[in-house]
Amino acid sequence: MPEDELETVRRELTRTRAERDALRQELGDLRAMLRMKLGVARPEPGRDELTSLGVATDAEIVDEVQRLCEELARLTSAEQADDGRWSGIDDLITQNRKIHAIQAIRTEFGTSLQLAVDLLDERYTRLRRRHPDRFGESADAYWDGFRSF
Image (cartoon, rainbow, N blue to C red):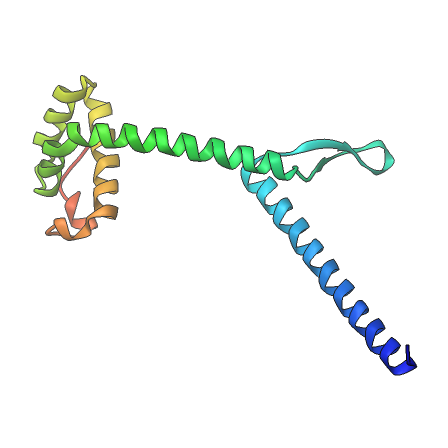
């Protein structure tokens, strides 16, 4: 093989190794970020006998993502079932009929007055985020004159 072709092959090999190393670093960073976000960590011996948290394996990361997907599916289906119970109450909330909404919440869910007020606040926030066009007044004006505990 001529010397100039050999040098071209060496440069290409050096470039390919640099790309590989960059991809390995990027994959390691991705795994570390996923580990932190998912709370998946394995104790590993560190320097000077200190324990550090190691990067989770791909299988551990995938298992945790699968668990979160299943939990989200359960929550979503439970929320959809609850939406049927909330439909009439939602109308009261969007019509700014807070007292009637609190009465309906207490009747539907059998809650205390304080919990009904808290549920009204949470539901209002959710509805406001999902359907801002259903409200005739601003978020600040909605609660004007309403005093809770």
